Amino acid sequence: GIVMHAISGIDIALWDLLGKLENKPVAELLGHPQHSRLPAYTTVYPLGRNVETLKCAIDRALHYPVKALKLAIDPFWKDEPELALELLYAARDCVGPDFELMLDATASFDNCAQLEALLPAMRECRMQWLEAAFPLDNLAQYRELKQAGIPVAAGDTGLTAPAEWIPYFNDANIDIAQPDISWVGGFSGLKQIAEMAEKRNCRLIPHGWNTDLTLASNLHFLSVQSKSEYVEFSTSTSSLRWELCLNGPKIDSDGMIAVPQGPGLGMQLNQKTIDQFRIN
Image (cartoon, rainbow, N blue to C red; front, side, top):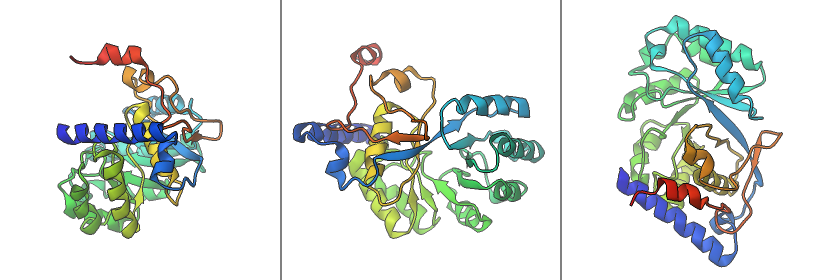
């Protein structure tokens, strides 16, 4: 809960401070940077209830020069599978055969039976992963979903301290861990989760639907990992998303984001935005 959020913020701030004291990017404090740029994806939300609305939403997302999109599906997909299938195929047609697509179910399903009609289409449309299919306490359904032939991602809907992740690695055997650095204890907690994931051959692709500080933190962390993984580029309309930093990371024409090179996180805070939203 809120205590882990506070611990996370303090931890991130201390790593940023240490980097400034030593005149090094956080990436160099974490290890040996292996990637100067990382591939970005944006999330399409909401998709809507018809093909026309879906295409408009995808077109807006593609204003950013990404090579991958995550589709945030709605709870009605479990009750209206025919409409869900229509939207799924329409999304693939809209972006073409070579574009990478992922799905975020935001815990919209209760069990694998509700996904049964959709799974063949997910495979046919080459979904890179299915994220947060069920509520987090439904480990048995996560285990069953592993048999569907689509990589299973989890953790972004509420897992915090590293110890909470153990059942998802050991019992659910997830394919992709999606911790949020601002929930799990900052860089220190994220390092522990990454070590657990590596031992189990599980990919780690952090959640990032928040501010430029989280985006910069994820870039620094992912830059020292052996494999190049996606970084989530939030398109939230929140003022905190776009106005908290004066030099937030941007997506280049290749769909990549450069790792900030300044001391610490390399971010310059916008004091005007901080003053506007600070609570006394």
